[in-house]
View 1 (cartoon, rainbow, N blue to C red):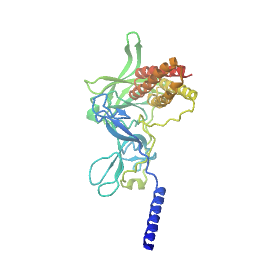
View 2: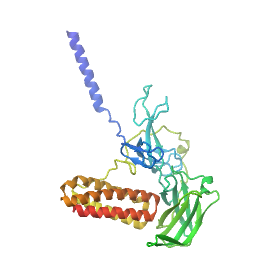
View 3: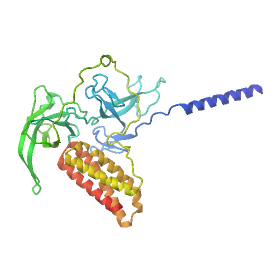
Length: 395
């Protein structure tokens, strides 16, 4: 009997020790939510399973996160901002996909876990297509409507416009592909709204420079801010795309580090960084916006975001338009529960206005990516009208 009681006491002590250990163990890092993308059209990104709107294939799950990458050594991807351990350049923000794998096989998993040999799965961060929209030469960066090419326009001197062309990962196009690009830069043109016809008054061909990896044109001198339009075909039989630039100042190449510390030169490659939670990437479900507590506060914030979008478009800062537009989208979604508090007539108006505002935000995001002013202004017309009707319904 005494032996039995002793055994019970020992068992209780073991249970208590395990419970205390579990309570003191750090919680596993919170993972970004699953998104769903198309294997052939990675710019398609949804927050639930479905089919691709472009090719009708089933969407596949992916876990996206924000990371920091070296602009020169693209294999250097870190979880926090800082400098490249190889060349000391400032890291740039990128969107990566998270996977976990085992040394014993090449299978990729969307969750951390344990391998068949008992070792933990290894976390990996890989740049995804359209994950790097950072200009490399101090210019303005846009995605082409073909959803593969990306371009950067730079204005380094008062008489020179340069066009850099990249692939879907933000890598410079090789010379044999760059030579197929046909482009010109337009500095003066008129548009007849009645006939929808554009007449170019001053245009300059963009030509490939020898061993420099970009197209360049010598343009007429312009006062700042300077407005220019690049019209580009990525092949003789391809459609022509329009990219509108507004340069408030001459662009400047990022300064290269004057020296690299010996420790950085000798630093060996390190294992993939452990996965940690980070701010959701652009367009990714789960982006956090601080919401006002009252309906009046939400409406007031919507008006401020509308003004921010309008100001960015006026300045030609198209790449930044998505920030206030998406914030307005989230504000609009937060108003949906308040529809029940409106009068019947205003409820129908408000519901339709919220839908148009959200659609306008996505249109602004897409138009801002490709840098076409006409498309951006058309998208803003939808967005702004939605904001105005929301304000009228909820005030």
